[in-house]
Length: 380
Picture: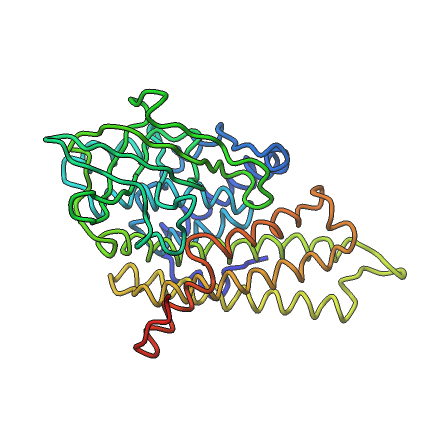
């Protein structure tokens, strides 16, 4: 099925060819192995050189192509899209947005080639939604060096990353600052990662609780000294990209549900011929189409430098809430068989819950939009 019938003309021929290459790789190399990695809570590290060959890690500078790539990755497995966004989006884009020219020259080529894998260390054990005011990790300057101390939580890619973008509050002026931490050069006691166990969503993403006690040189400090500059700029793109992940998650769930409905027979005929099943399929496809249109519009605005935080929040909130609806309806089509990973739908069902919560919860996104609508803040 052509999921992009209404939106594919947003891409030129070169972009469409690249999307086709990504789709072919996902179907041939990722889809056959992904269930076993999901069951094992492991990331398929062998695909990293394959991603390098695709040449798609450019810090999400091509917003439109990135939106389609993320949807396509999430269609096969949302965790792969999340890995891609953490590395090429949050980590690389932090350097592109807030890095010095020397930092960009040194780090970006290594990250484009996936020689260095990045993670983004912002969230903390006691501070998620209120991280801007509640951040407890600290940084303190001593000449041309900075001492970073703190604990970060739910940090994707952290168990195998080579560099981390770490955010901490300056003890001297209370401003939040970002640093590039070269994990490969850190002592074992300076950057301690404990993998988060027993997840039921985005199981393939390797999240860690990170204990940071390290000295970094001044040359590794990012520019900008407030939460809005540059963190909000980075999160604005990240939030509509999560909307793209949620859209792709729905596409994958729909695809598996449609295939199953055509093959599964009850009462002597395929269940796809039943009115109630068709009603569910139409509702899911309608959700997908609405989400695609919103995501692509945000990508256009981002490409033009006109995307606002409120627009990105609306995309994230709307698409992830519709994703929850869609995967629930898709799982319903499978009946009891939907409880088995052999039918794939369970991955999308549980991943939808993670997408709904991370990168800012549904309620937080709505409060951001509500403040814009009313001119009044409802935050505590």
